[in-house]
Image (cartoon, rainbow over all chains, first blue to last red; front, side, top):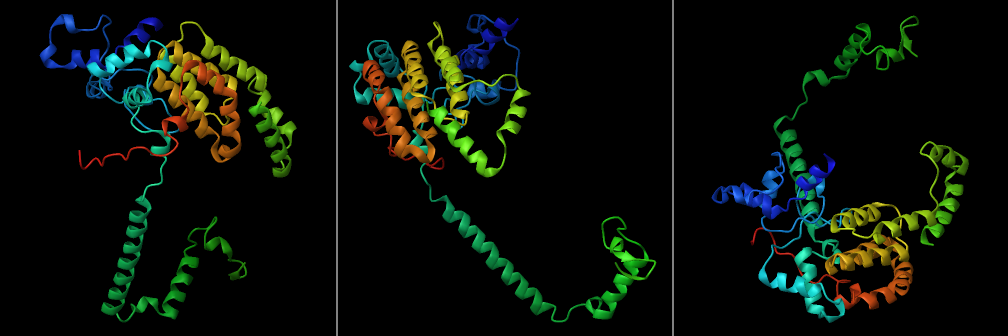
Length: 191
Length: 149
């Protein structure tokens, strides 16, 4: 059962994509091992002709450049005749490969190098900008509100607020940890 | 070797932070016997050196190792490189080197030259270029904005 499941999982993205495509509806195009349909099938179709080389995020065949998970499930680029020739050459001694060919093979498998995806981007400017804009807008809004309502409502008067507090204590609101818990009812004063 | 030094450093830190080693040991015991650094290195060397290992298992091992709080020892790195050679994937080998360099963290200036010195014979033997030879120590290409594609 386990081996069957592994075989099913390791059907390449290309084979699965071929099976999903309506134009390739013939039985001969189906993989040897029948798979159950899963929620990954859409992603599998989108992975196109890319080689399926590992177990991805939650088993999804997606590409991601990330230091926590540096070896994604699929190669970055689709298979082309040029890269096939290069992969043939890769089978022999690696010393025979030129630096350009090694780079081409790397870029076939991966999108960005570590130094590229960890490079500091100027995104912080946008974040700081949005932050300053929102502060400026809220100051303007506060000024506008203070201009429109020049007097505070009468419930803000000192004696009314005192009366409100009396009532809260009288009704014993929040008696466990809140306001009333700090009131000593036997002596009628704060604890 | 690196794990031993890191372990010693952690022990020294533990003294200052105030957590006694006996408490650590008591916690560890709940998870079975503690694995020594040498055993850990051996285990991963053996994992990568296995006959008939495939790209899936290599990637799994490397992803796991690079997710741990440690710098892989030169022996594990070499073993991983040889595994890449056996499955004929030079891109994987280069990425593995990059990952190991990244694991050195803020100690890149001291740890990375040491690692490189240890693994250079294997790199020469297999024909794997170092990150500096490829020019991948600095950003090479800028990524195209998704709005321009």
